Length: 380
Image (cartoon, rainbow, N blue to C red):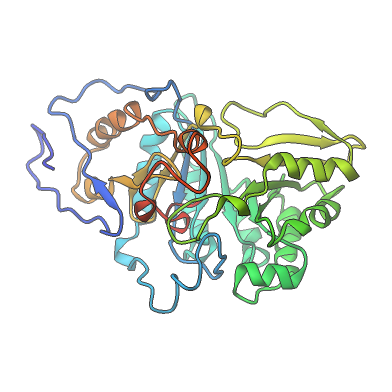
């Protein structure tokens, strides 16, 4: 696709990684005045930007990066393909001008990205047009958190979300397929709390028959800790995890199990577009949540954009095609030109994968399974 322009003679070289389809955003021939806050075709605003900083991970969780696919011969992105910290910050600045108030750093495992605290420090200096500080968070498997928590906090990170799918070591190591012990993740959570990266959230992906017996032990462990435990339905993200509907434990059943031992009271959402349904323990022992992407989709309030490690913009976690922003960055286009290219991408957004999937028979999906982007590529 050609890029239409009137005031920039340089040619854009298409650089995007070819494993996922992408298009080259169009720059209008006439640059309009900045459009400010954006809404898509369903009236959903742009508020949340999730930035993947690496496609690599030191775990091989079977629902995300199964070892049979992501083995020693798997071709990860070369360093030259990754967005630099300066490129990420430049794009973040544009998205903030269009309404983004929260940035979440993801992966792969984001703490594997060398000098990640430098990027956090750069992002922490940005502000919304109203002069408000950004909400900067990070999702991690916790394996490196004990070592890095203080540097992350000092750089300006506000909170962390830690993935932990079991307390039982045998179950946890079978799921992460990396022989990594639970104790080390718990040390990371404790250190994050110690340095002030709170409130900490712990995400547990629940697979029926694999780790659902860990629901109550996890709840018991994190009660009275200040940690918010969230149970996530096993999702059909990507094309390699062998997802089956019969392995999904509906969130309603998770709440039933919890409520049988601990009385729960429903809570209101913290903000519009929040993915988790919140509950609190009636005895004041804390809060839990469920994320029900499969059985109770929240597409109608989704306000998240996702930026891949090498600069493709995805409008849905279940997308099969992105928009190549790296080509614009490395084609030396101005922020005004890139802003003008990004604006219609969001304004034309109509993604609602989970809603469409819910209307189909079990084990079927509304998109080509072979083309859906992997979670490790754009983060959760």
